[in-house]
Length: 124
Image (cartoon, rainbow, N blue to C red; front, side, top):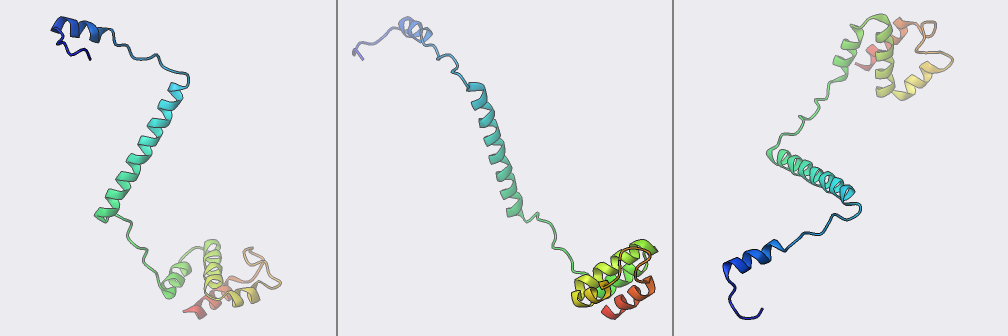
């Protein structure tokens, strides 16, 4: 600086000479990445606030096996067969393997539905 004070007109005239540089190559792509980054940061901030407020999903209630078997027994024949076999496989995989030997469990011509129901009642 020269140490002299500038007049107001000289200062305004010098400000009008200031020009921003023209946009460089790839500026549009950079703007898109900035928007994506800011959106991700905003999403993380919202999740952090919701987590701090305790607005999480309620923990899943574990349903007992007798209730699950009773619900499966109320289904129609086809879905009942599948639901009971899934319960048997979940609770007693060895017994399920014995039942599956030589049978196509999930088909109508396979193991009788009454036998599957009997096995499921043993789980209770």
